[in-house]
Each structure stands twice: as structure tokens, then as C-alpha cells.
Image 1 (cartoon, helix red, strand yellow):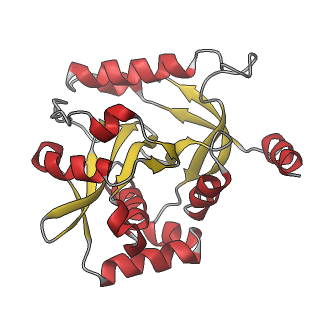
Image 2: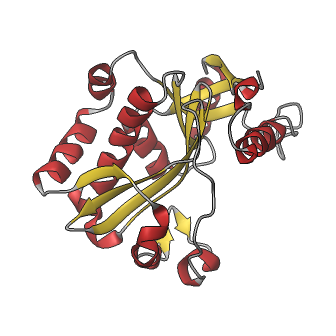
Length: 237
């Protein structure tokens, strides 16, 4: 039954073209030209299982962002809004973080669960948490921000994103297992979307990995926030 549903979903995927706006890297730190170019090259490689398809072409978990945050907020499922309000009531807050300030908290978050959506890599659970040396972006077209959820000065969840032209991509996201029931990760996703919509005027799409490679629990979680499978054509400029 699930296979039949997947086939129907795959066949009916909407298609979008996403402009990474590589031409706009001029004037920014060379780091961003490299990051955008490297990502685009990854998207052009052949898929490991779908030999006629490219990487990140089919099944990208994507949310098309509306024009206003309030519209996005009502687009997500009611359970996501309830999770967000719970975190808000409990005193958690969202902010763009200086990652290197919270290295000890990052280590505690990673070590709080060895199994999340599958076994955590040993290097993430027990490896050293190294400082980030990415240069600050000079524009609002390309960026590599870290966002976090904080309470009483303690980081309890964080994500890092690649912002490139029309897209904000969640690359990694972790929440401390002891505070998951407080709605910290839903707050992180929702507020990251708000930041993307208000801080990066070119962003039209919000992505969170792929859809079909995820288990059923993760698929439901992604759909809860509007991430559904799309076919994507990636444009460098």
C-alpha cells in the first residue's frame, strides 16, 4: 500500500525552478562563491539509484513560502502551531546565534540522543565540536547562518542553513532530547522560516532535505511544516 501511495505522490510532484543567483556572489567573501558552486555541482551529479535523474532533482522536501509570515503560519498544520505556542509559553526564544559561543551546549545537544531518525554518526555524538570559521556574509543574497532556541542563556536546539538566491535550505538540525516535548524544534523551524522571509528578500523556497528517503515518522514531521516532495530544477544564475 505504501509503495502505491509513493508512486502516486512521485508521479504528481509539483516542479519548481530555483535560482541560486550565483552572479550575485560578486562583492561577497569568496567562501560563498565556493559554497554555491559546490552545491550546484552536487545537484548535477547522477542519482545513485535513479540513474536517469540528478541528485536533488526528485523528492526534495520543499515548502513554497507565501508572501507574508502570517500566511505561512496558517499554512502549517495546527499541531505545529500548538507546539510553537507551547515553547513560547515555556519561555524559549529564537535568535540567530554566534555558533562558537555555544560549543559546549552543541556538544550536550548532540550527546543527548544516540538515535534520532536513525543511528547518529559516532563523530557527531562523541567527536570534538570544532569552532566554525565561516566568514560573515556581506549581502542578503547568500549566507550560511546558524539559528538557535535559547532559554536562560542555554542553547537547546540549533540549525544551520544555506541561503542561496531563492532558497533557504536546512542542512542540519538538532534539539536536546530532554526538551523535545517542549516544542523547541517546531519553534526553530517556524522562526527560521520567518527569518528567511524577512531577512532574505529573494527567498521563495524553504527546504529540508529529501522526502522519499525518510522514514514514515520523519515524513509526517516534514509535512507538518509544509515540506512536501517536489521536482526541482536548479539554476546557477
